[in-house]
Length: 558
Image (tube, rainbow, N blue to C red; front, side, top):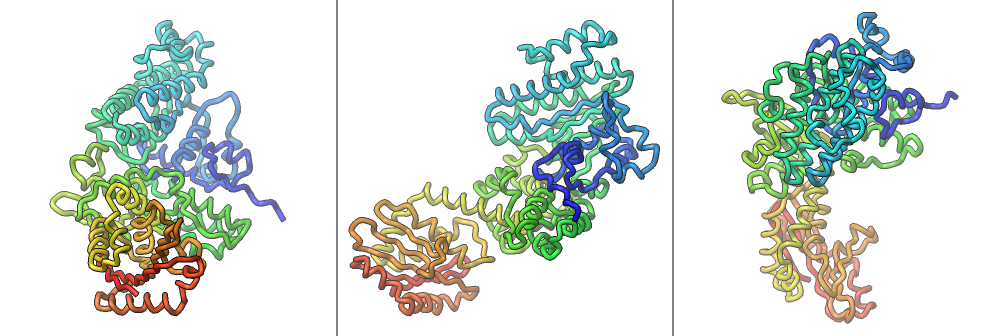
């Protein structure tokens, strides 16, 4: 049997995928559509890890004029059958290709230092220009300053424009400019407190390169968000934006239903298609159903060697969740209720702002829903117009993304419980003060964001957060060990005097809280949970049955 192609995890260079005989999901007709569009500057906004960098690499390999022939890379791919009018553009242009994702640094100084490195590296890639007699002495002097690493920071602001002018003169051909992940430094700067400085840098660099540049053939940019013209693209009237709501180009980022089916068939894992759909599908780009490509590839790699491997939230390990954390940390009671609705399988209907800036979040909390939509944490299921504003109905797209919300909520709750005193609850448990225990738990339930799809697991995690970390006591959890013991046991470590057994139940009916408390206590007795504790020398054993219904609880003592 012919050996299967490798799965290209983490390979973002189109040429490397082809040369290493990796599986390539053919997106080359994007080249045709870009040429047909005729736009001078095109911006594609998509979530992280949805193939933006790979597509930019594909464009570079197709259009760039090099000393060697790259046409072999496209043999058998869809673009070769699109027509000679498209193939005629292959290898015909000087190309500037830069990625700003490396500018994710903790300070402006380090981010700017990385920007200089990115620019210098691209100048080095085009070092053959220094051998040409076509460069004007002034351009050569500026080029050499950047090439040799000048300390004059000002020359880097207009460097992309300078390089395009030099390339155009030497090649006697207009230049294609590719700028990948243009908004990464802006997002990073917002969360690290130097947003204004960074937006001035990016605005100056992009305006210089893209606005009234006579050396420009066309430019393509990618990012997660469409930053408003007023803040960064002032006067750039030749910009065409394709967001996740655009129908054009919708099939070129992420995997379509048919592409996932072909992948599963190729690797003989078709039986797992329902799991793949449940975990990694759910995105809607334009009118196209889209799967998360990073997660699909990782899961298929996992199950291709062991079909019983469980799905994982692969995307959560690569994507910054700062925006979700901000939503949850700074949420009002109304916002917490909306997040709960989403976590419990419901939807929210909110206004959406296509043109936005990160600073808008601090002025108007409504903007955060737009950020969550465009960065892949929510999915549109309906749209309507209200008073000249677009309102979208949004849901969480799949299990993978829901797990990111869950993890972030639990992390926020853990930090919140550390920041507030839990001593009163601990003391009430020891003192067997039922009324105080109920009051404190209900107060905490009101403060946090709850999700009830796995009710007992949620409440178990909730109580674990409240009761862990007390000096001199160990908290044991059967959810972690799976050994059939009580839900929680709070044990005095040194003297073995006191042990608290807690059994948890959840119900959807308030009237059943008493019943489930009794059932919890009954389970403690029937399973003889205290026997082992007595054998370990514990003298005082307190037993609690705690029943939950949404944000209410009932506590009974055995």
